[in-house]
Length: 194
Length: 194
Image (cartoon, rainbow over all chains, first blue to last red; front, side):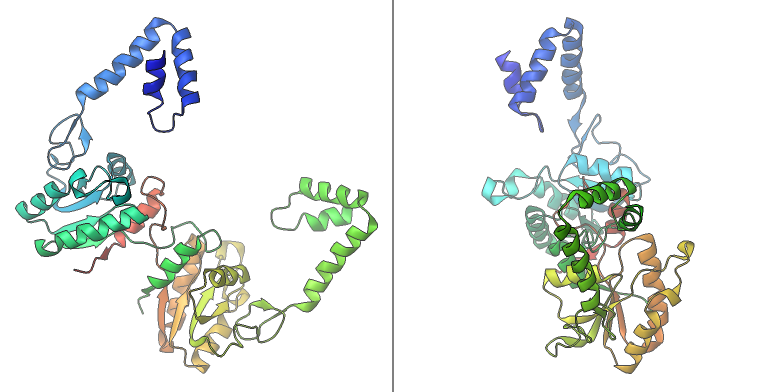
């Protein structure tokens, strides 16, 4: 029991109390249910791997996106996590490919460039004569630091380097926006075509 | 009782049920409390007016912002409501002046240009040789329509017309952003300086 609680409590959003509740639930449930959960977890892990091109998690290598010849392989959107790829794919308007950093630079937590897939990105950009690298790290302190670091490292690559737009989120309002978001929206204001 | 409930239920965020609760609360409370509320409402109304330059609500005309010679009177930020002025002032980084539209164009609700302070804005821009008009309507369907209408009407004025930046809000993440916000952030991506 202690072992399963300890393991469950490592999952994101599962505290020790929830882990204990799940542990007791599994104890009381039919053996088949625990068996099926255990097998599903094992099968998921056994059937997924990291794409050797973009480092996204998929069932095949290369992943279906990297293997899709109808996508624009000269345009790379760099994101922090596999879940970000899923979000952008759900949005549906992006036709290029991805590169998953598997995190963001966080010097205070000991996450440096070597912990991320930055070297493979630089090699990929150099090797494949990439036209545009769109940096899609999160608009946070660490995400901004990572974006600046990547832009600097990509300077000499010849690829155009851009970043997702910042400002007021569509559907929001001035009243519900933070001071920092308002300041960015004002600072980054754009000319309206005459 | 019915009269106070009817009036209270017109206030934003106060439904008929809350209005009844407030009505009963006032019935039960000491006469002095109701009297003071009544006087406070009356005094607020009696002591405020609309600034004849920017149409913000203030205790003086011109309002303290329009009367402040240290602000940049050649730069006008156009917002929908007086509460938007308060938000931008709280942010603290804006040094120009304002123009309050007192709403936004909403053809389906019968709100046309004549219902807003658009003509006074155009006259003000022409008369005072304004350098830049920053359109700060909300990033919503109606706010966007209003922004486009204003940009068109300001075309011939000679003033630079810009709009608050759109995209991912600082501190948010790709995972928590809407599809529409992601699509705008991708579409509006900006070059990162080399």
